[in-house]
Image (tube, rainbow, N blue to C red):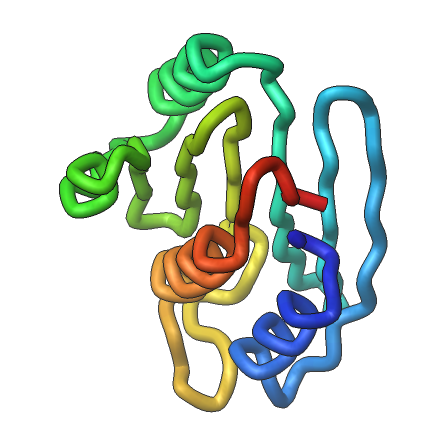
Length: 138
């Protein structure tokens, strides 16, 4: 899903007028889709952790290394632990997967709507989560 056509369209809409080039990589257990427009970089990654407990462990480790993470309470009430940072990182875990949307490589304001990095990351993370179904992360 992080490199699928729907996500590419969503990224293009958020970053317009930028036209990012897309590349992806799979290094078990991490799938990364990189959207690059000049010097600006957006990465969306899914880690297949193998179990819900392992995904929660990965989530906790990411939160410990993040710069001033803030939990996203509404997501937790839906059974989707999540956190975000002011500089543009959003992380959610669902089932046995951890989703990372890293917009820290974008400019401070991006796209025609002049969105902050954190707004771009959150928007894309919720788009991907809305499309996930039973292990369909790629």
